Image (cartoon, rainbow, N blue to C red; front, side, top):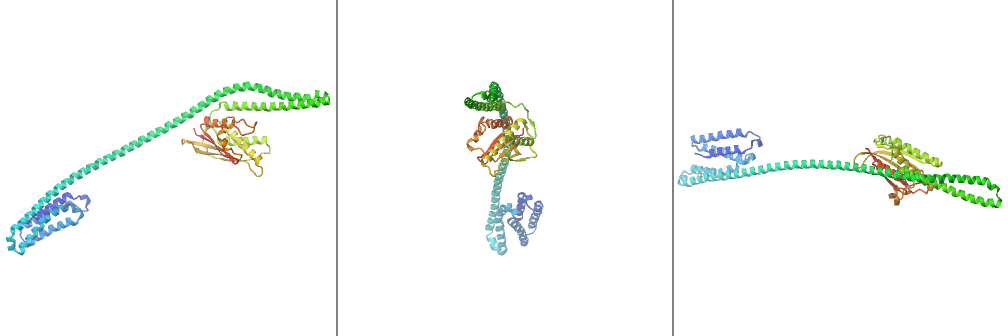
Length: 456
């Protein structure tokens, strides 16, 4: 009796348990059932007949199965089992061939052939046991590896979840930090405005008292100097005519000197009066309230007011006025009167600068004052507007750029400026409107003042 059909049945059962049906392109279960039936049929056929041809056919079927296991990649899981069958299969085949070819020799050495077949069976059993132990070890290792992979996946998912939670929390903290910084900045601006208001109120009270005390003596000085000049004119046209010629000439010289002195007293008295009034204007707290106005209209109005004001003083002055006003300007709340004072001061300075350069250069120089408005962004991301005043006049020397906002600092000749215009303008923009004003200039070429006011 052949054991090959049993080996084939064992191999088919082994393959049906080890092959993953989802990884092959055919029905493994159906082929396994058919293989079992064939193996059982071959076993029954071997029991019924002892024909060498039948046994050869049975062996051919089993060898075909073993060859399929060897060549088909999806059946490689059964190669270890197949290798354990080979010794017995080879010894059994050799024994049958020797018995068929030389029966006497086989009978004389049948114990050797039986021992060899027994060795084949023992080899199969040992290899099966070893393979089974290896499979169990590999299965444990696989399960362990899968458990570690599952644990790693869980850890990775937890890590991703924690990172997302940390990122979300960090984002929330950063958002809170930005909100706190914005609030702190608003509080600082409010504090600066309050401090400025208190300072202006205190300074206003002080200067009001000083102005009250100084204004009366100044009025007396100015009035009596003018009256004295008139009296001297009456004296020259009246009593002087009765004096002798030699005395009258000397008296006229004295009167002329007195008249000149009185005119200087009047000039400087009026200058002091202007300084006091500028101090009052600089120190007073604006009584106006903020409201949304047409910035473009306000800018154009004060530009023309400044130009015509200078033209009234100097009939020969001419300058080109260029405007580039953005149509859809962001609405901002401002104190119109205060912003108008700032613009008027900048325009006056610009026209004065180009006028002085025209006098100094002459020739083909064309005075130009350019004004533009545009939408922009404030440093904290809020919408803002930008007003730019540019002139091609004398410019500002670099040595004094950091002094132009200091009170009473001026580059104009004595009697033409108090040095309070830019200081007042800076306080109005920076303190009252929470904006910025900075200058870009090149001496002898141009000066550009840029005002930025954020949308409240």
